[in-house]
Image (cartoon, rainbow, N blue to C red):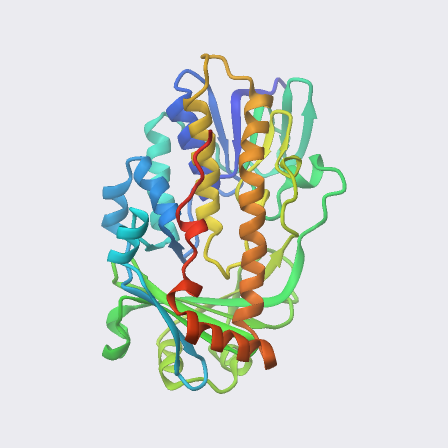
Length: 403
């Protein structure tokens, strides 16, 4: 059987893959862009994400400002509180402050809404995507890469943009001695609740972060403020069943893991009708461009630099990856693309920033869950430094413009 062919092949139909396909279709209108997704439908799970000004800057640049404002919420502030006493640890105004300082807002969205926005733009470029394409084998060739699915279908392409997530087959099979993702010893409980179902005093347009010993919780509005997204991260065991990362969970297990918590936090959690459990895995930060690029093959999003959820930058880094690729394609000096050279340049531009964000996310996790002297030092620093400690200009002023 002759293999299917594409000039550029994107593996994965999540936020990273759709973003990559969007910029490829935008800047390479004559190229054949293939998009493979292992699921039977393009969809995203029901969870919220935070988009700092670095992420919304990308969406604005892509002409998605109006689409974002239709579905997003724009919280007034980040409010850090003690998970047991409820006392305030610190606050960072968002809204007007983010616009004034960074030029674009801090937004919170339902992941499915962002996914749908991107999918519509991808389809507008005539890229329909191939569903049910679970990849079994990825092989580097002199001409690029060959992919074989579990059903025996083969795809050849001169360029492979692998956005196949934390458990990337591309990374596993094409990056020699690549360490496997490791369980962090922490699990995340996730749920959503309609704002109208909450006690009235909890219906606030805020990102509220609850800090406790070996745990933290965060909740914020999504879907134009009509829903509240809730995430609770605790130390715990990896679920016994090993299939996938998304597991059913119970309220009883959650409250058992939390122990004593403040009344406001408990009321918010009790309002959530159903919970899902995600074990958290991670890898060491990327250390060089070669961790992300080999010849005409690149790893983007979680495939290349998975983020722990303590800086809310997983989706943002995937958007930045695609934006940087688009900038490089836009500024090329000829119609023909020297893909190994362009992707090498992309890797050189991305690895330091992605590695820094990975490391800072891990560091934030230790701070959020601090006990003993570290907790005392954290609380003192937040009380003294306030906004300066909670803001991250080096992050939110990005993504860096390719020179």
